[in-house]
Figure 1 (cartoon, rainbow, N blue to C red):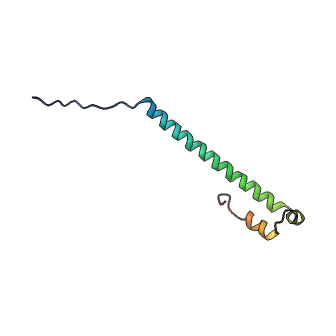
Figure 2 (figure 1 turned 60 degrees about the vertical axis):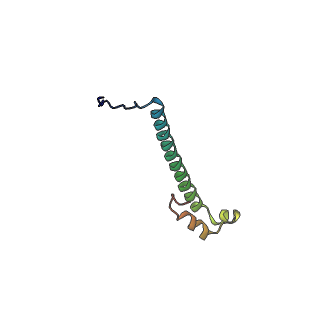
Figure 3 (figure 1 turned 180 degrees about the vertical axis):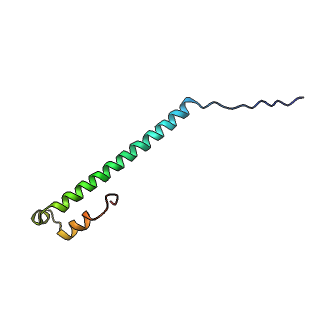
Amino acid sequence: MSQSNHSVTAPVAQSDTGIVARAVGRGIFAAFEVAGIWMERYRERRALQALPDHLLHDIGVSRADANQESDKPFWQG
């Protein structure tokens, strides 16, 4: 009996590349979603900071609370 030195390798299936492409796509989508949330926080905090005291009083927020919220970095929820 002789031994064969043939090695068998399985080709990468199309479905495997599709799975990877979908995972990369989901990651890119998630990154844009987070960036959008951060931009929204930044804009809202700047708008809150710009409100005059009488409008803050109308919504039940003190100037100190508005300043504390607007001083947070955009990535902090």
